Image (cartoon, rainbow over all chains, first blue to last red; front, side, top):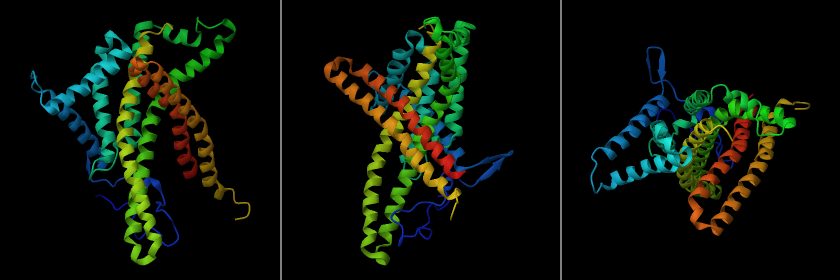
Length: 271
Length: 77
């Protein structure tokens, strides 16, 4: 790969029990491969385009031919598309959820592929662990639900948030303040940070456990019995590997679900 | 090392994250536990309950994850 992360020479196997990098940033930053018109293209950017192409490819090849009895791959893709359409768009937003389906579908598949890059052999890097990608997607979601909110409810969207009619008059300023802070500031931030932090935590844990396992087992001739701790780290790493598959799928689902819920709360504003 | 506050920043942010993880841990336990109770009581509502459970977990978990990010910011600064 582009650089050797956690080189065996840096790890002090005699005194430490687990290999930790001096600075975690080096697990997430890659050197520039080439430059196009001022944009420095790194491995992350290439993987981002790859994720987009894979997502489009899955949908194109899965749904290219509409057959009465679909192929196995086609049935699987149809199942996922049906899940986003019925389980997220129509269940949460209601009948008019179909209008927002293209956005939700694109986001779900892009995030699914991007998150599962974490456990894909030879890639092993979740692109969503770089803040730019979740932050941009959260920003797009923010613009959409703000636009829908103001388009559907005019300025009552802002006014009723600050001055909610359903609350007793003495408490309106307090509830209004909390709601304003929560809807206009906290929502997009937590949406982005949730995905980002989950993926960072997963990538860190997998890298530390699996590389520590390999390094310690490789050092058994030098340090003797203590090296067998590597077997434990590697086993734990394999367990986390399975857990990360679940987390990757779950976070893609939760990001899409929350987007749908935010859009819904802008459409049906009067609670 | 005497009077060196800088050396404490890393360990202290670790303790801070540990404290910050307590609340969301309890919260996720309550959400999941009650969801299981509800599913056992009304298995026909399973789909709706599961969606709501994931939503509740996601909202609760955000606090722990913000603590996780702040840990890196604090220990790096």
